[in-house]
Length: 295
Image 1 (cartoon, rainbow, N blue to C red):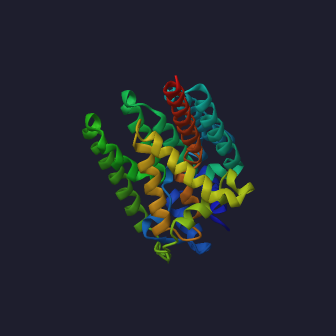
Image 2 (cartoon, one colour; image 1 turned 60 degrees about the horizontal axis):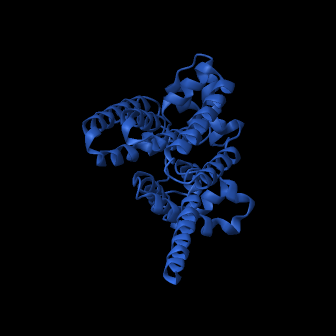
Image 3 (tube, rainbow, N blue to C red; image 1 turned 120 degrees about the vertical axis):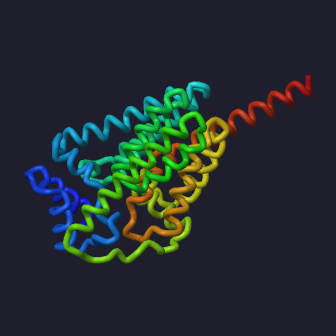
């Protein structure tokens, strides 16, 4: 049994009335999945949601969040040229469609990624909505928690962000307590693989549109970060988040922590649109300057 099969089995049993923590602990132990530390047992929120609405509705909900993110980003980038916006949302939509399948609803990182993608598209004028979206992402997958810390750089919402951080910590404290009440299982082998940036690129290629041409992985990822660095003049939050995910995977993720990279994909991979737009504007301005000089 792999990770996705484990999460689906938990959902199926919860849908039939079983206790989440008892079921999850038993299936973890029966299939040699770790139960310690508590983060090896996923948050119960997603399992209860899918069990409540059903697999098909859950899939449509995940797709709706991603589609909302595509639309929100097109609106957010209204200060850029239509061509640049079109390239960006095309890359974003392509990355989403190639990474979302029927079993994707059981991967917690997919939901967190969709919510973060949407939350990053929300402007500063809708900061409360952005905070709510990011908080939900963190409750579904604790790997999203650092983005709440990044929201502290925005002074007007700092008090509310702190309240959200406290609420998420309280939620995971309860989660840890519930996990501790169950029979002990296998300990995690730890997170100290030190795979470096190549681990990030390898995982990104495996789980994205880049898998059709793996040789383009490094150039594309480099162009993606460069593009988001260009965008940082408008909003620094996305590039900080991507750097954080890159650092976490480079330092801690093992080979079997493949899904971690989804926390940055597919939004990160749309970054070359910004780099292309910047280069087009740069060379256009240089050409205009030369023409003025000749005149």
